Length: 449
Image (cartoon, rainbow, N blue to C red; front, side, top):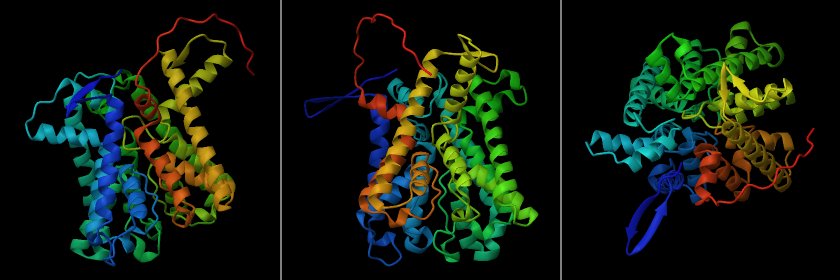
C-alpha cells in the first residue's frame, strides 16, 4: 500500500510515496555522515578522509554492514569513531524510527502519514499500535545494549582501563545488537575483528546473544514479550523466524565444528563454530581467520549471508521468512498441493510471489556484481562472491579485498549495501510510482522443469 505525501515547495508540488521517503532518508543520512567523516577532526592524522572513503564508511555504518576500507581503530579519531557509532545506531533502528522517536519524546503529534511511513519502514503488519511498537523498540534497544555493555565492561576495562574500556564495551555492544560488525581491535592488527577474544567466553557469548537478539526483529520480540511461553499464540512470522534462526545456527555450527575448526582446542573450537555460524548471517564480526576456510566453508558463509535475519530487524539479507516461504512452496509443489502450508497456516500467493521476486533480485545482483568485480580486478570469482554477498546481505565479513578495490568496484559495494539495508521491494516500490491497470490476458500453459 502506498501513501502519498504532498509538499508545496515554491509552487512546485512534489509527491513522495512512503517507500521513496525511506530511500531518501537513508541516502541523506549517508551523505551527512560522509560529510562529517570527511572533516579533518574525524581522522587521527588530522588530514581528513577522502570523500570516497568517507562515503563508503558512512554507507557501511548506516546500512549496518561492517565492510571497511580503513581500519576503524587506527584511521578514525575519537570524533570519527563517535560519528560511526551514531550512524550505526541510527541505521540499526532505522532513520524513520529514530525520527518518530524524536517526535514522540518532544511531544509532537504523529500524523497518519508518518505512521504509514513507520509501518513500511519496520515491516509492521498494520498501522494500529505503531507508536506503542516504536516505544517498545526504543526500550528493547536500550535494555539489550546496556546489558551488553555492562557484561563486556569488566573484560575490556581490564585491558584498556576504566574509561577506554567503557567506550569499547559500549561501541561493541551497539555494533553487535545493530548487527553492524564494526570493531575497535586494530591495535592487534589491521582488520583483526574479535580474533584476539576467540577463546573469551564472556565476549563470545555476549556478542552472539546481541547479534541474535537484534536479528530476530522487533515484531518477534513484541510477540515473545506479550505471549511469553505460549507459542501457539505466536504469529506465523514469529514462529517462522524463531524456527529458521535456530536451524540456521545449529546446522552451520555443526559443519564448522566437524570440518573447519577440527584442529582447535575443544573450547575454542566450540566457541568459534557457533560464533561464525551466528555472525555470518547478520553481523560481520569474526573470531577466526576467514582466509583459512575451505571453499566449502566459504560457500556455506555466502549462503548464510544472503539469507540474513528477520524482517523489521537490524539485520539485512533476503530474510529468513523469504527462504522458509520458498521452501514451503517447493514442498507443496512436490506434494501436488494447491496451497502452501506453513505451521498449519496457508501462505497467500501474493507472499510467495514477493519471496520469489526477492530471491531473484538478490541472486541476480550479487552474482552479477561479483562477476563484474572479478573481471575488473582480476580476482577469483569465489572471493568476489563472498564480498558481494557480504555487502548485499549487510554482513561485513571480508576476505580482505575490500580495502584494495578500485573506486568503481567500491561503488558497486556501496550500492549493494544500500540495496540490502533498505530492502529490495522498497527500492522497487519506490521506483514504481503508479500501477497500470489492464485487463486480464488469456490463460495458456507453459512447461517448466
